[in-house]
Length: 295
Image 1 (cartoon, one colour):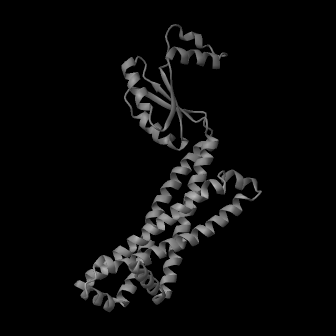
Image 2 (cartoon, rainbow, N blue to C red):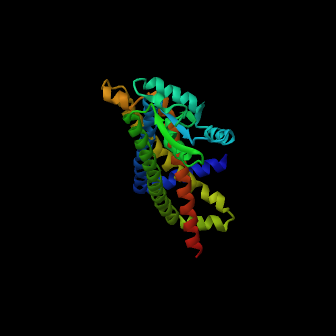
């Protein structure tokens, strides 16, 4: 209990000693996590919109003519990934019957006894966002003649493509903004370590372990990370709730998820990310400062 009181007192003293740097650190973390949270909300809503627009987005895998039943079974089993809801097998004879029924005004009976079609696998996905990945996977399989998408309009395809772009942009932003957070927390704590270098040296001389000395600086990093996350989450929640409650039809179409569905996981993600970045920034800063002091 005494240790906890000491660490808390030292953490607050560190923050108060460098008020300007502390304010800069929290501000940077707030802005960075606000952007990450906005990406999270955007991607989540886009995935929901894709699901609404592409509930009947299916893949039709056309197999080579004359394929063996063994190879057909292998492709069937390969198609049954965790992302797939169901796989229906349509034999070439059935596919031809459906084609004749669909285009009854065309002279398809001219084919005679020869069936130009191959067997088909009709695949329904659980998550339409995995459409491109599965299509690419099935196209490369031996024994597959072609892969077609059925039931998807142009809007659904464009949403899927934009979802891929947004996910990539979010990953890049996470890397860039994460480095920015680490750097600002690293610099803030490095100033604190430098200002208290004599006290740290005295504590080491009287037998304090590195872990004991390090704790207040770790707590300082966590304070910056979680403090910034809370501020960012508060602002983002207010904006999202206001936008979601708007009567504008456009906002309802691009924000299909209600605040109750999406804000809690988003806030938890931001707080977790803030804490992780805070701890890592503090660890890097303290270790770097101690190496320099030792050198």
